Image (cartoon, rainbow, N blue to C red):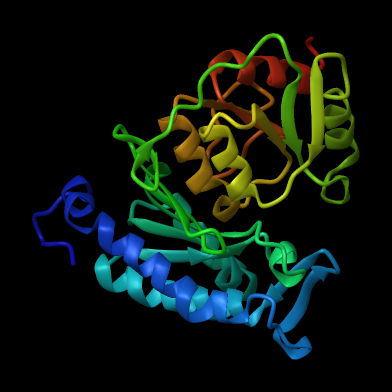
Length: 281
């Protein structure tokens, strides 16, 4: 646990591996035993048929909330399922207290359908600043980590997003149209143009990882939920990428962003995608 005089940087020096262990244990205890074994009573809908929650989501989040809170006493956990039960708890992201931002199963729809393309996302932030993140794909046993100013890594190997190859179309993952306003739909439709190859996104966390690995060029997303974006945004930044909202400002996990926004493998690509979304290109 953190000492009275210890900074967050010092805490991460001593306990980043403990967070990694907690993430792995949560997946091993609550997620993977249910993968491709979910019973009907273990799956519920939240806002609609595409917004699913399972016992794995709830129990893994509870496991992580207990483990992370014990590692950093005085911190707050903001998890997707807890916020669904108590929306006011989301406001902790805007405060000065260290906050763990948790998505226990990012890509629940894929998880329910037996697709391995899901992950567990954890980020540590304070005063709206992302400090560290963990992206774990348990079906593949792949763990990506990032600490602000120290780089991004996948299973211990440094990640470099690299620059877009101008000889091929931009590969851009986009929000599902069911979750967009009319204005956002129009903005996203601007990506259907020469030199761009948009496609619907899967797990947001894994889309960010694909950018950090240099396998994809960008995302264009139309929602702000911090648990979907916090871990991946830091991962992309530390791999050399950038993110911009519709107004050209960086995305803020505290909210109030002009949407849609983009995260991309380099600044030039982020500017190009933002310009298309804004109707400037």
